[in-house]
Every structure is written in C-alpha cells, then in structure tokens.
Image 1 (spheres, rainbow, N blue to C red):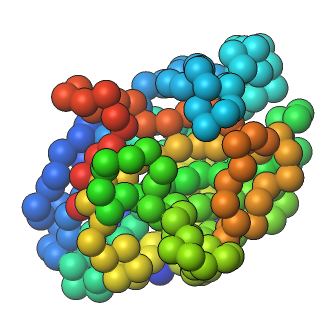
Image 2: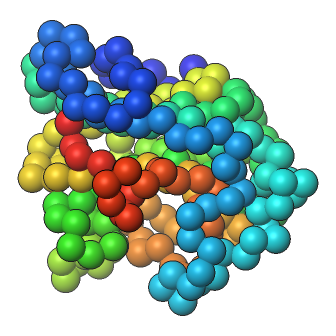
Length: 224
C-alpha cells in the first residue's frame, strides 16, 4: 500500500446500478468496462484540436502491453454517515510498485471527471490519482477556473494504489451539487501539468475510458 486510505470502500456492485443500501449508510454507483479495449479509445477523431493516433495504441505498442491501464470496473460510493465519497477503479493487471512506465509515457493519471450539469463536454471538476513510476499524489481540481488562475485545487491525502485497485476518498462537500461522472485512464507523453493547471490539447491521451451507457451516446453516470 503506497498511501493509507481513510475509510473503506463499500461492497461493489457488478454492472451499473444505484444501490440504496450497499452497506449501512452508503450508496454505490458502479459500472463494468470491457477487458481488452486498452489502446482502442472511444475518441479517435479530433477533440479540442487533438487527434488520438490509432498507431500509438497498437496492441504491440508499450502502452498496449501495459494491462494495468485497462480499466475493468469503476465506482463511486457515498458514505452518508461520514459525508465522504470514495472513487475507485479496478484494472486488468497489478500496478507495478515502481517504474519504468511504458516507453514514451511520462505519467499515468487515473481520473474521475465530475459534472454539475451535462450540457457541455468539459468537466466541472476532475479528481486525479497520479503516478509517474516513482511518485504519487491525489488532487481534486475545479476544471473551470471561474475567473481564477490557477484553478482552485485541493490535495487529497486519503488515497491508495494497491494491486489492481486505485481509490481515493474525499469530502462530499467539495462536489456539492454534482450530478454525473465518468472515469478515464490517461497517459502523458509530455510533461504532465500541475493538478491546478488547465489540461492542454496535446501531450496526453485516453488509454481507456468509461463505456457508454446503453441509453445515451455520452459516457456520464449518475452520482451516488
């Protein structure tokens, strides 16, 4: 365990569902993601001026061989007694204790994008657990600056990267009013930005991300 986590993740629910009482005083939203879709992200067209090149993600590439970037399950659990949210993701193979990262990768971010409304694509908040092969941190950043530079940012101490699971627990009030979220595994092939900086249009790519819900063409899931 690289960082002690405050609180425990409630029992997981296979598939997507909102569970009123996973355990006493908690609710969980969880989805399963396809195994083996690493390197074949949803977006291969231009997004914000960036193209996700298919050849960067070939099955035989260093990134394509790093199965710990392939998410199998992601969830958010609301602990109503503690007024905290735990976000987690389970990946396909154990995450190494130390680097090196796949060739060409400078850092990995496991990210939960959080929305106050779903009228536009850019997230309102991003929750990050970062690993560069040696160092880790977790942070929650308002992804809309509201006139502030740098973006409002809160470093989070209660996170862990252990075996196949990445999880982070934070105060629910930090995202009060949020209605939706999705999970993404990001790899940087340039210098990653600081957690309170705006993400540039290039230098990073989505190795894996939330599968679409069956009833929408957007990857948003409800908050617990």
